[in-house]
Length: 200
Ligand SMILES: C[S@@+](CC[C@H](N)C(=O)[O-])C[C@H]1O[C@@H](n2cnc3c(N)ncnc32)[C@H](O)[C@@H]1O
Image (cartoon, rainbow, N blue to C red; front, side, top):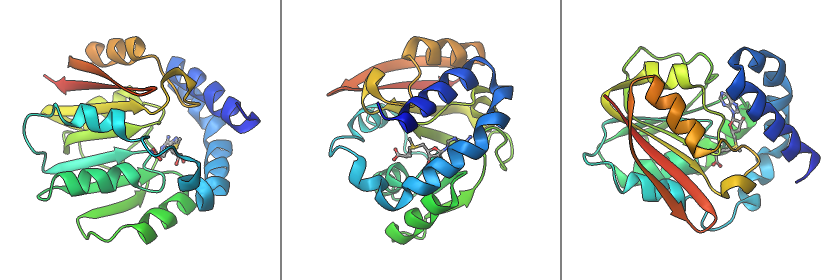
């Protein structure tokens, strides 16, 4: 792993254990991804969305309101928008330059972007019936707050434990179950993994 990737892993480990530590990492992480934005899409493998897509295959009903947290250049938001033609999709990120790229790459008016921090999302409670995270640090309290009852959360890591931003799925599952989610299934696709859970 590069130094930047090691830093992202350190931040992820720390923030999942103690979310309050995010205030120390927020600035450096935002600057790191702002710097990476122009070449972010050239760094990804061609099958990097496969684990997330495997999880989405198990969502029983097409969602209407979707949130992609840590959307980066919006790849997952666009995939979700194409998969669910009736859905409004919003992607959020702290890195404005990532969002600039996301807007440049997105045609659909149903897929929009907003600068926001996953630690404190600017949305009402129960606003979304699907929330996706692809290679993103989960803030579990906010995930539980914004997901509507019966809605789903899909969390994917495209290179499994080799993903710099990585949380073991057992940990993800435990944190979600403590907040009223039911585990639906884990998925594997190449080196990547994903988890789907439903808010009870
Ligand atoms: C590893 S990138 C993944 C981007 C995108 N999901 C993808 O798969 O290409 C992580 C993204 O999450 C963003 N991010 C990290 N922490 C965040 C937070 N607390 N709130 C919003 N965005 C965050 C970063 O700025 C970065 O764009």
